[in-house]
Length: 126
Image (cartoon, rainbow, N blue to C red; front, side):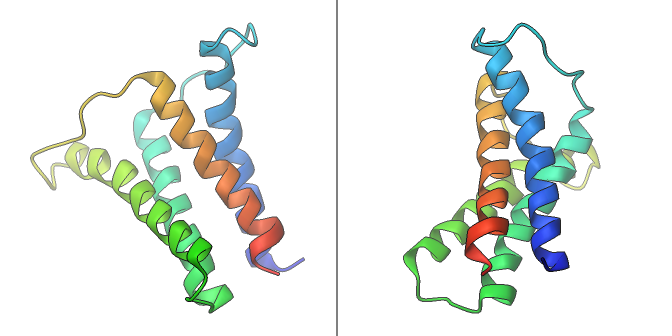
């Protein structure tokens, strides 16, 4: 297994766990949760995850004609914006931020990001 696949799988697993456990807890499927990470840590992880998804498609796969790959690029851009706007606001680089989203929506986005990275690591980069 290449280093790139390993990085995608490890990053995907971390983001998936950090999104799935709070999601399942908020839906009352499980009775425990993990301590919340500071927002800036999650924003950085989401930015890295989005950038890594785009990197997988363009630099590793080198296959730009597949519609699924363009969907991954679009999702990567959304993740970068979802993490980058609050991060840039907290660093006082921009004067606006995203509206406060419910924890459920945030957990769904993190879960989707982690799952996408895992799928990318196991299947797309072959």
